[in-house]
Amino acid sequence: QVQLVESGGGLVQAGGSLRISCAASGTIFTINAMGWYRQAPGKQREWVATVTSGGTTSYADSVKGRFTISRDNAKNTVDLQMNSLMPEDTAAYYCNADVSRYSGRGYYSYWGQGTQVTVSS
Image 1 (cartoon, one colour):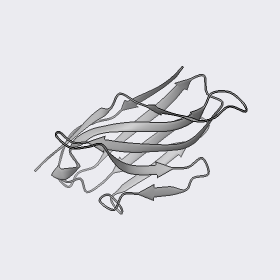
Image 2 (tube, helix red, strand yellow):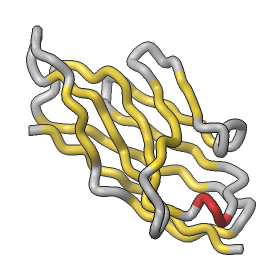
Image 3 (tube, helix red, strand yellow):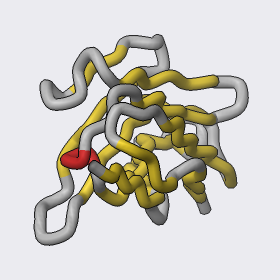
C-alpha cells in the first residue's frame, strides 16, 4: 500500500505564511507528479499546484505568485509554501501523488487525509 500523510496546517492571520508538507510511504517504485488540492466547506475540491518528477511546476491562477510547491524525490515528499494568505485560502488541503508501486507497472493516484488551513481576517 501507499500512504500520504500531510502535516503543517493551522490557523494564521491574513497576510501571513504557512508551510504544509506531505510524505509518501509504503511500496513505492517511482512517483510521477505530486500535487496539492483544496476543498473549502460547501465547495468542490479544486486543484492548487503540481510538481513533476523533473521539477516542473504549475499553479492555479488563484495562488500564482503567492504559493510555491517543491519536492524532494529522494524522500518522496512535497511541500507547499503559502505566502500572503487570504481568508479565501481557508480550506482542507489534500496531497496527491501518482505512484507506480513496481517496475513496469502503471501509475495510480493516491490521496492524503487532508490538513486544515484557516486564515483569519
